[in-house]
Image 1 (cartoon, rainbow, N blue to C red):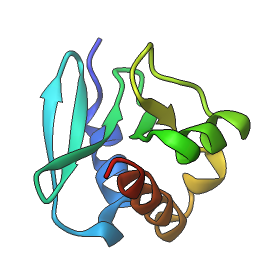
Image 2: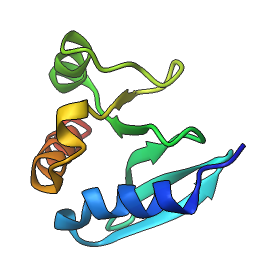
Image 3: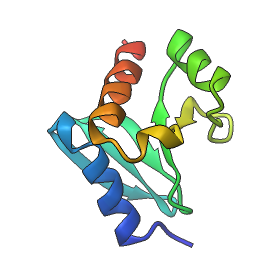
Length: 99
């Protein structure tokens, strides 16, 4: 199974406030990049995950986000799925955690 075109469009729309987005299909899902740096992925079932580490990753885990396999990706909280500004703000926080 591979990620649907609708799931790709939704993920790009939810992070549109970030600007500079590109994506690439990989392993049935997609990786999402901002200005050439990967910050998120969408799994083949349409779940959106943000790349995070440190305190930001711990906060996501503690607030119910699930980890994508053993990778440093955490599911986007449901309350951010309807709010592109909130989703993008969280994505900015996760990107800062990677520096």
